[in-house]
Length: 265
Image 1 (tube, rainbow, N blue to C red):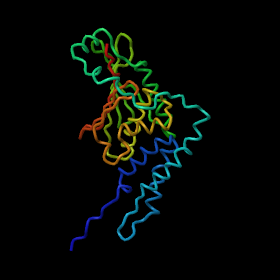
Image 2 (cartoon, rainbow, N blue to C red):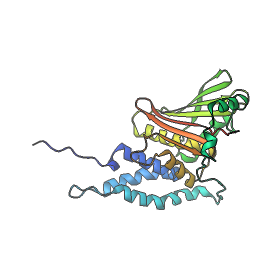
Image 3 (cartoon, rainbow, N blue to C red):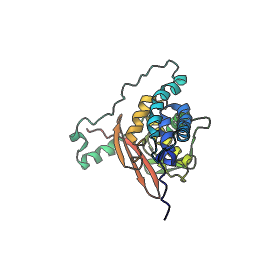
């Protein structure tokens, strides 16, 4: 009689540890370290009985409810949360966003919608955001190539071996018009964690490199990176006047694009 294949629970798979790392981002530098450690401990303590595997993630989540505030406490320093827009900004009306293509093209010729920062400014904001969520060895974004094409300046940057950025800026003003994060992992848990952290940090760098825990949780939910099935699902949303699109392609990896929402004249 053939031996039945042993079913490995999610909490013992690499995907389970990736989810633990993603959840740990909400707790800041300490959370990133402690979250997967807690899952390892639970895997060792909560053994299967009579072939029934206990729900380790339920206990892990309860531990996170207590652990997140505690892990963030050393970094709060009595600061007051001054964010005035924690809710997703919705378009003023569907009609405004569905204007004719001809009108949009004429607006783009006269005015270019840009972010408030230049390419160098965004790289600096990226590194500040990585420092605010990373452990002893934070990820670092480095420019690898810059070239001019017509009225655009295209800049490529890399973050470790798993993440790259394409940042497009308006040649006249130098301000960024849109950007794309590309995550192509090696299959290791570490490269997967770098991609997850980079997706959150991409939005932090646009809005606030020192984003608080509540907004990080909101960003994670919008990106769909905390669910077991939603990490590779395509997602689109608008947040604080910026349109985001996350997509996944087999063999190419994860893509996250960001550009300003066009304002109707």
